[in-house]
Image (tube, rainbow over all chains, first blue to last red; front, side):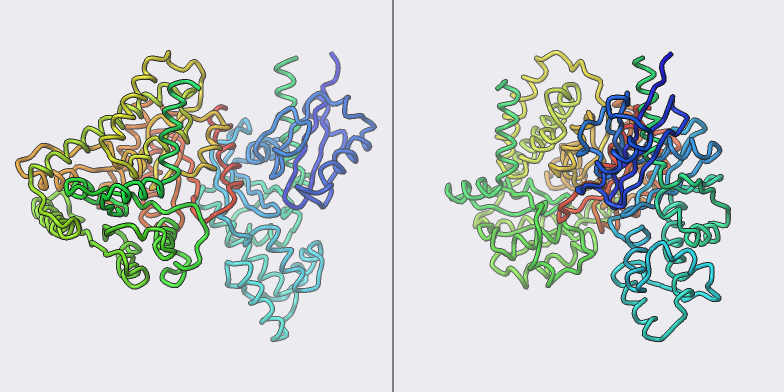
Length: 263
Length: 376
């Protein structure tokens, strides 16, 4: 029986992720472009992943689009919500996980998944950038740092400067006033991460936390946020190296299931 | 265009252009009284020969209302006040304002100060509505409202006229219930938005005329074979579920509304005014019989039990709660009602709704995921 190649395209608000699977299990290639919906990011991510796998678009049997820009991505065979795809992807990355926390560029979600990876219930954050990747980007800009520097700064912190505001705009003012006082930058970053964790933990608690917990989305790459969240929830959190690709992986798995049904 | 689509389009036109209905009433020299939610004694307005005109806010941006209400007030009251402040409701002879939530308590004073040209009739009804003293209080307050309406109408209103108005309203409620059932049986003929528009049109037109149109529509629907498709069957709950964008998402996802517990919809038509010697006492009794709304004093959370009954009775796949942003009573109800639904094994999705919001993409993701989850 011929291989079934499926492609998952996760068109996010700030990044585009593409992942190609062989027979629903083997990752042939993946690509991440730091440009999201409405930009060249999605097509570049698609081209990069295909090139990396040495494939042409026609070689892929099923293309499934997910993420914020899923409905505008051309040529998708299936369009599936990012919640369903993150549930499938998180299950593939961490089979035991029953709760998934996904923090993306502009939203945060808590998912409950069943033993088969099926989405059972979920909650999304309200319409506010606080507690999302955008919040961290804004804070990094104020600190004249790159968002990728924040985890290392958190690790070097000797204390914590609390950030009390739950609003991105007010928190930015608060951070600026702390900078004016000359506080330690690393301790300030730790405080910023703690504020994200408090907000995200509240979302997870509203859903009901059932361990084990897995974390997906771009913010999962920030160990400072992950540790703050572990501390806030009082339990460990599993993070796969492919955490940011979980949505694209779930979309590719979804495509595989659909492709298998029709084969 | 089929008869059903033509009749739905006619009601849609009325629903989406309330100003035309207001102007037409003024043209025929009929006085019009604005009616804010919730559960105002509209029948008394009708009995006085005036047109009750629903004020459910609007999907719009506000600028003037911010002088009177903080940003964390529900958009229904923000936009209703904005319409008044912009002079778009100047043709009204009065507005009725109930005092059943904190924000509504401020509406009357805000309106009196800001709008001025349209007088306010305060409507008080008993929170302890089920005890005899509560029923008597509500009856007495409705009589006081009647006296104000008589001043506006410039004529006395007899109990016979009130009883006749009650009969017309009960007939309208029966027609709405029949239409809602017919729409649930024909989801391929009546979209969620069309269902809503047909119901909402009644707030801007003569109820007897609305009844006639609904009865013709229901008859035409019932003459058709039942829908062969297999949509997801949802019950909606909340204050308002009239956003074209949100209801459009439901249609895209193949979702049918098979019953509702929405204040603007079945909140009006589920319960009739009982027959009583004093028709105003009957209106008070109706208020005591109402269930299923966060604005009503409901210490046992009968709302949750009713929702379970509705979902089970309609063989619904789940419940969609369209949560009015910044509505405290709705948010207070969420936890106990969710627990009741969880216990009954009925999935629930809550989606926040703000009439001033321009984008519904987050709601789209949530509704799509909910539909995917229910379809397995």
